[in-house]
Length: 186
View 1 (cartoon, rainbow, N blue to C red):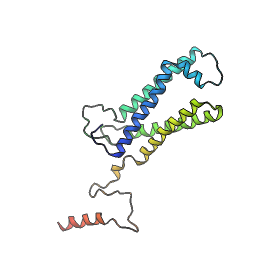
View 2 (cartoon, rainbow, N blue to C red):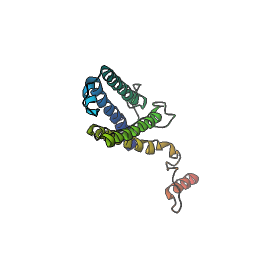
View 3 (cartoon, one colour):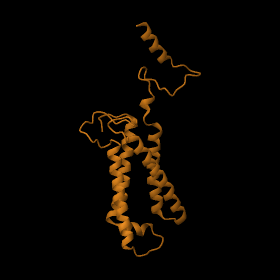
């Protein structure tokens, strides 16, 4: 991470690190103690089968893989030795060309998982599902913020630095007009 990234990049990096940590916490539980995870989420206290243990550990390994992919392909962990400036979320950024798609996919994943965990909590009333819904919900909201407000550099004029999405009616951008006058006079 660069020495002084802008506020958007701080949120973006917090989101990618948060995603990796959240998925890693779940993965550790599923890999090291799958029977405990199954017991916490099961409706009735039944004996766990070897198939459940295998599937729990496999899910844990898959969560680790998703966390690592998120970190590498968003540019949070650089694949090169040069870390002079933050990655951009524009599609043509050579440092992290998959940052925007990974951000969108993981945000969708967190949103879908929030709904699923909350539905399970409503139906079964177990606290573990509510904790999952809260964790996924926080990650989904930060991801949604990053999707909505990320990549704004492409919407800035290279000439004036003004935001292209704004409209001057009923107020005019007098600073932009002054810059044009200065160029014409000089």
